[in-house]
Image (tube, rainbow, N blue to C red; front, side):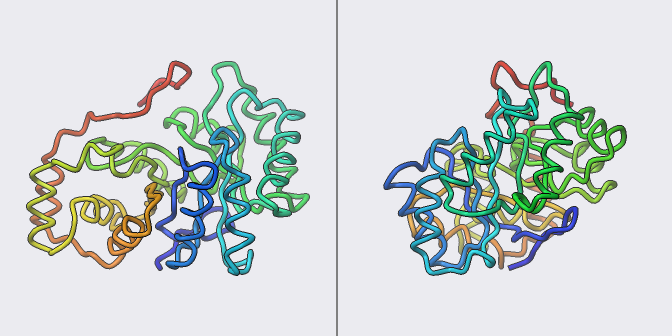
Length: 272
């Protein structure tokens, strides 16, 4: 599988998102994904499923060194001491000595970004995480992290799909060689009845979901972490890695409305 490089690490372009895959359902989903060949698993302390993810990885038989594991610190835990407590608890739940990538899950309205990133870098230096990054950072905050603070940001994980324009953020991230990891890459199920995607899928003998994922994965510096608890869905999503869209397909997708943001909680930053 094609990989992305960022701040000293590389990770598979396609991973498994695990939001709302908790307990036994979550454990089975991660075990299934690993058995099918997924090697990029995404979780977070807020998801409440790190124990299930850790149990699945332990039971999978896949060497830990072959798995890229991302977890995240919640926005209420961004003080340095709280970050240290959070990573210790996450690693215990995940049954591992380190996370491959540790992200600020959401920026906090009154956070000390330099202090938070400094604490995360100390975790990297101690070997508890291999790289650090951010999620849900608009350009202004990403610029602050990279240009003012000088942090080695390995990725920015944001909502991105065929119904949401992220071109300005992408241009900045590419200029700084920061990968974008797309969450909600299938717009939380909103793509199932899309006639444009259905027509493209029919032409290629695939599914609208695979088309939407192929559109993302075909872009420079972009990965995606679709959630799927069923082996059939996980396998179907894997087919997107080999699907090549033509110029007409991309033009049709480009013409879709691009204001369909799905995730914007009350504490979200001002989007660019």
